[in-house]
Length: 456
Image 1: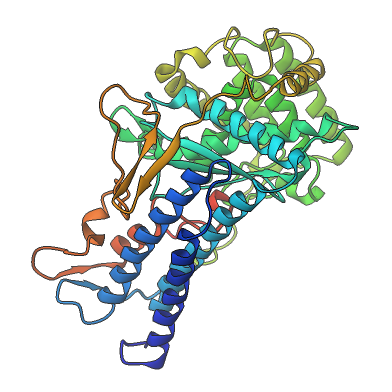
Image 2 (image 1 turned 60 degrees about the vertical axis):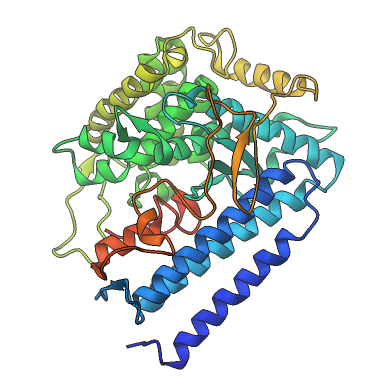
């Protein structure tokens, strides 16, 4: 067992010092590029939060007089340190990527301005109702993703490189339609419903649901939120995503995402709830044809963690699973629209355009035309996270009254008191269930929601 006197212990400390020095160097760099103020503030917040978390682990597993972290049978000390350093490294890479890309070609800078605007348009309806306040920063990478970070009010949204238009073609701009779903993950993790965190409120509304359905809840929320923002074109976009994987993926449950054969029905059932039956029927007909062509499974086997006891789980018919999903989709829609009425109904201002009851393929063309018409004069003004070593604020402020001040190193989560340097009071012993929750910081896992599942 690793102890504070062992050589391995000093190695983990040296690794942290290396990362900390890298962040100090980054803070001294030139941040005058577009969105530079927010990216600089993000680096400060990351450094402050990571430092507190490293000290929490280093002291808690060592000889601290204030806190003792009880050892876990499943998650050794090395795991905790590795997880933290991986998280910091991942976020550093994202921040550097977002900054360097804004110094790239004129085409890339225009595309980033467009993706920033779209991410902001996707998040803005939730502000003041589901989410208190926030801003967005986008960057290009190989696939859509979101970084769920606990230490600053910023949604970091990864957009596929393939979304950048060229002089010869703009049809690929449909790849920007991944953005509302990724923003939905941010809302799920940082939103509030009826005085409870969004994820808690929704889980508490699903008593007795199958375990496999509860595991899909975050993805279902992101699907519903994205569908309310994007309308029918989001549904068509997701159909395309389900057909570019291996055939076996159609019926595989990975423990996080609804099986691919069912995913498009989330959107068509949502559209019917919005009063958009015509495009919903079009989409169902198209998806049924795709399933016939690909060879759809009739059932799936629910995901079972390797550590679970017992044999293989029984297969679930897709027809039964769809009925279960339909009820959850309805619940999520009611919760969201109850707080954001403007997203409800066929007349909502979704991205599919004024005529959301027409032909879905034509809506794609309208979406691309609207994107191409965006110019610097019509782009929305995004709030920037401005500040210094003492803290930061979103400017312009999004709430009436004084702007909220964000403390460097804090998260507004319950674990902040455990991470503060002073840690007042007698020495406390924390069981693994507690310190793991602190380390995982409300979804702060490698790769965001696509990364390693939170240990249960």
